[in-house]
Picture (spheres, rainbow, N blue to C red):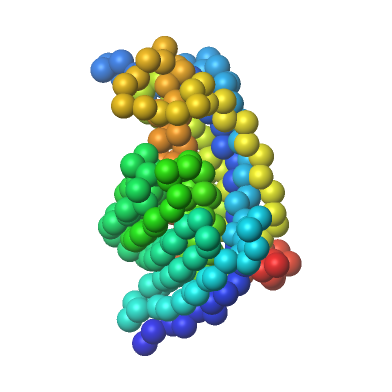
Length: 252
């Protein structure tokens, strides 16, 4: 029997992210080495975030169509959004209970690469199609893909009964180490202090060790995906109850 979770609820996850330099692990006793040296890692950046999906932008109210569905599996949580403005045309579909299928084409190659990280490391099925005024800048496409993805995510989560709610993960990538902590509480908050050293990530790396923009951004998406996976997963011990001592999580 399919479990029909209410759609259209508003999700404003709280996230905390930090970026630190990472000490590479030696071949011998890597875990022990990591534990001994973790306290010596130098804190470079800090983030706390709560992305919030908005249905309007500076150009007025865009046309948005959305749908929410579940499959035969009781935990098949799917959100689907189409967002159209004068600047972009975006379609997003996400399955929180997928297998990590990535299928994104936004005309912004690095954004596609980051969406692949979200899918692969979160085990979410992510399908994105976007066209936009990239002849001017990538900004509008990046922004509207994020808005549509956030809206699809909050649809897919439904009432959030039975989920873990909290997620926490640290992702190393060579010299970069990113930490993400999030709370799907419904309370809006964002704290972000990622210090990305270059304005653009091109096809050729020129940064020094510990200052690689590509690594910092990619590790952030990986850590976010793993933390979001933790937070959205069901906790069988909760038996379908809301993960809050108040008995309710905000949707507004």
